Length: 165
Image 1 (cartoon, rainbow, N blue to C red):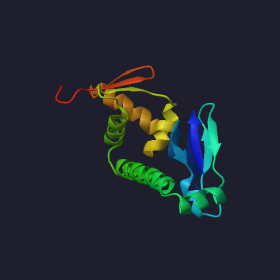
Image 2: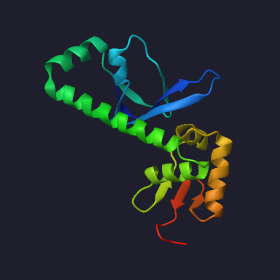
Image 3: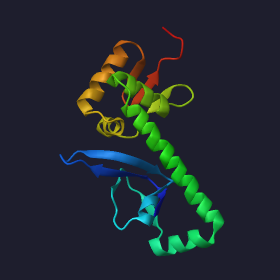
């Protein structure tokens, strides 16, 4: 198991045709690869998106701690619950059609309280997170901008305020 002390690390799997699918993105203060505690092999690759400092928790020591320390066990359980919630959200998003609806719903999740997003990763990675090709993402963003649902300025995206026309 790992904890991110600084930076961003994403877990990705590769499809049979070689495309990377982002499973999870962990930022400072978050953990990753908890499921590997109960598996014989890692099922994902961890990729640092920017320089990262990672704390390694050896499997045997971590399993022993979880069996003897209720506070640690509760902490790991809470982290796993957050990961499950995130994966459920990804599944919900991937079921949205058309692409524009999916992209807008994802942007709503990323937006701050004022409806603004400062992208911290390339659009190709964003496309992978929502299960679209980068070309489909670019088309969806352009369509959302044409209809006024979003405004783009470089790496910044602003969502149309609710109720505005």
